[in-house]
Length: 98
Image (tube, rainbow, N blue to C red):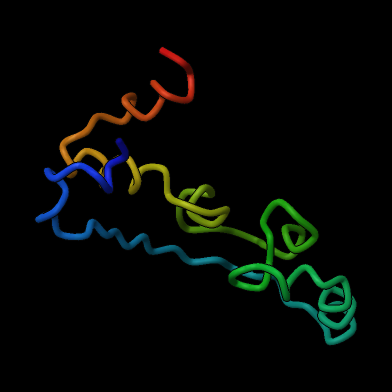
């Protein structure tokens, strides 16, 4: 039985989180932008760059946790799980087989 089948979840409000960040990009000339766009990378990802891809070389600084930029804020996710009355390590049980 999954969480969607558990009647305890029927009346729950959605859990949401907002994480703010500031990404400081380098000053690029038109030729650099054209070549980067031609790689296709910025067309495939949110924010038009990948910190761990080709676009990472154009990032001067990030005001936030780097995990917020890569995908999901792990800190915000843990807080949402806690607000649902669960503990973060409970997510490991199925994955780790413990």
